[in-house]
Amino acid sequence: MGTFSAWHLAILLGVVVLLFGSKKLPEMARSLGKSARILKSEAAAMKAERDKADEADKADGTTVPPSRPAS
Image (cartoon, rainbow, N blue to C red; front, side, top):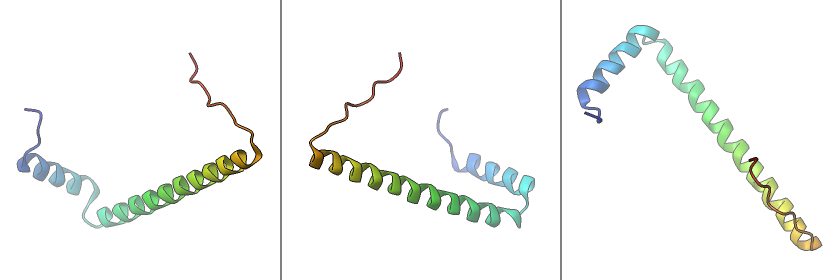
């Protein structure tokens, strides 16, 4: 009951094609791919920035305690 079969996916694909049209789908997939690439690069940049700040803190001998979630 909880799994999708090939028929479910085929019906879903048919409904999506009927709603958006076959010409609009590749355009939507391209913009989704661009968004995913941008998100991935921004996440990598944030991680690199955080790692750089951590290394600078270790070199200075200062430590910042981890933040606690709000209660």
